[in-house]
Image (tube, rainbow, N blue to C red):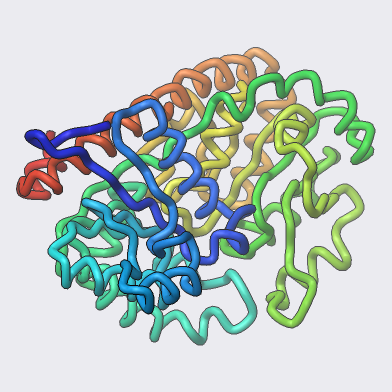
Length: 367
């Protein structure tokens, strides 16, 4: 167990509404945090409530016990009422607070029906919310700049979401099964993740209409009242060469089945799926947005495209040049290893110890 002086460090890693977010990028990021800390000597608890549930906590309080778990630091990953209650308790007990930025006004837009109407009010709320932290963690320098523009009244430190390389082990053996399952033939272009317009849905489909390849988007999408008009349009009447898989039983099958990973996202804070594709040695074609320029290098571990036509041209290059696909894939594997959970765990444990020990958050971030 980690110690500060003679005192052990017990940290709360909290994801509100975890069940609803299990299949999301937020859920994946929190799994990465916890897995990264597992081999360290930080003791991690995942619920703020004594007894793991608010009802149990109330019973404990009525019996003279504690309502909240006794921890040295809280690290929260969502923005709802349970998190606010936990942060308020931390303030009352002088417990250091880390708030992790998975939600911004910018990446909330073009997600669900009505999201663009709500986004301005959300921005005002997030400005107040993130300012409650002793330290705000975010996935990229780009996101740090977004938060500073609100502005946030708290120190901000970028840290990669990381990638769980073990989660992808053995992906190769799924190739034939998943190509047959989704009727994939020839050079396969694919994306992974929840289907949103901000992730480049329209560009994905419009590029598909200009090429002969099979395009597959592996991931869930909304079909009910919350679905945006754009998502409903493309998923109900896709181009002939585009398949939307819905829920995928084993994500390794998606990465095994595809040959070129195309991710034309309009807004991302980092893009875990890009790292996952790279870890599988897949040539990646991605959009020209700040966090991708920050983490990836055009022509080295990916091709970066700034327009629909550039995506079409990039796919033509990759089809004609198998050596380029292989080179990008091998370099991408090296990039993914730089974001391994071992490095994330070292950074998080260092940050936790520093905050509990009373160090300046900006000094910790500068190490």
